[in-house]
Image (tube, rainbow, N blue to C red):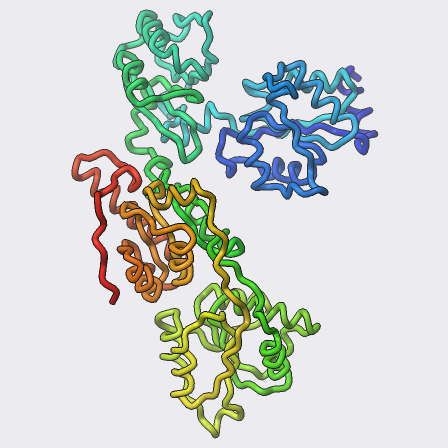
Length: 544
């Protein structure tokens, strides 16, 4: 048995004392982390990071509570100076002797990283370790730029970490070159490759901050890359690809051409409801920024809800109508408070407005008997609601749990159909506290490219706590009622969802972005974000 195997075996038998997992975080996009990496992060007692970006990445995946893992900065020491490989290894060993440690490393731990040196230190100290490979920037960044490193005609790749003593004559052939670092010396590198025999018109691409929504790529040739990179303000970190494969970017660029690529999108919602919308926005290449405008709270006087729930159990109602996910949540919480479950709905007909509301009911083990076939709104519900029939309907009463600010249209419509309504305040929507000053400034000065409104209350509350969005900001709304409220506040509606569903709303915004991109390209103009093109004024649209 070798020394390394012996150390590994000994460490395994004492794994309860400590263990180090060297985990690759990938090149920047959190979605490129492996399943195993996420599992280890969530089970870790100590996480030693490598860069400032790792802190946000960990926060997105792990609950950093008192019972959660401890974060240790592996990039800088207590004196604020960068840690050497040896000093960082000492930090890892110190914690690895007592705890389950994740040593989070950019890219891949064993590829152009200090993983081998730190792992050897673990062997020397008798600390067990394992390796979780990560996606390396040298392959991921070109892929996100639409540049394959190999094709059927180009099968050789050389990866070079640039430095002062590179003999560029050995790379004079036509194989693909991937350069790590060396942004500032690209002019000298290109000249050396040309002198070594590479044609001056050899294609070159430089991509900075690859796999993130700040990614930017400039394509050029060996003769012109230095000037073009300066003009495009390409700065580290960046990956350079040299070779004919760069020409494929023209047809294979997929990431930077996403319809909302790099857009900063304001999501004014309750924190509980923003998740699915933000995920959808990210899928289209945008950067969502969630700003709470509404806080959902219990009613001030719970007696009305208590009475209604008792009536439901006692068979007082023929129907219950849920007009929102929050209404489902409020009734479910009241049921749990009383020790009730879905069986209490036996014999009761259930109506739901919107697919998400119906899904929330289904998650409770129930099925909606009535969902509008047309517009997902109170008007759509009324259009399909059956009139009261004293022969077919043994009870003529409807339980309507809603927000404190709900309109009276639904109640009036049900009364016209012969039903009696218990319109009960199930929850209150309260205006949230104003966002930070920098966010308010960004809203007013047009630093957001789009804002997505999912209800009339989000319009009123955002304007109330942060001010009106700048005229250049694209306004996307979930339905006609929200559009009317936006117009009443002097906002021009650019995007209207075909039905009130957050995914449909984001899809519509993406369609708008795609059409805008095509229009700019056809006009021979550069593709810019709305925040980069600010008209002096914005035409107000009269409320319909």
